[in-house]
Length: 141
Ligand SMILES: [Zn+2]
Ligand SMILES: [Zn+2]
Image (cartoon, rainbow, N blue to C red; front, side, top):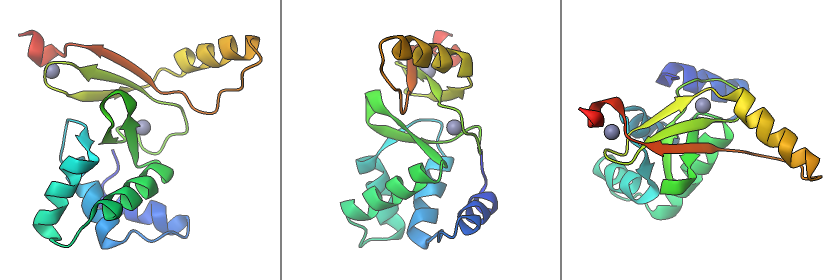
């Protein structure tokens, strides 16, 4: 996972600004094991920035995704900090259905297989996110 200094340097290298809002959203997510929805993020951001509005969050999330600093968990419509930053592989996530915990795992061969199967159907894959739902170690106890 990238820390704040790494994230800031990463953005600067790309000629992008790691603004206070982007930084605040990244920090909130970095403190979590669970994926947070945009609404949950807004509530927390408003504790520090009372004037933050939904577009503030959506713009920050779009930016952080584009920078590869966070990922979207489609099935929960929620976001997590990248655990394996920086990487260029597509991501796979283990999503606990009890506690909502999300663990990022590297499954390049799985995503490659999906792309190969799709190519056999003349389908060009642009992005694949694999989400595996189950129960995490803590919740099994
Ligand atoms: Zn990642
Ligand atoms: Zn769990």
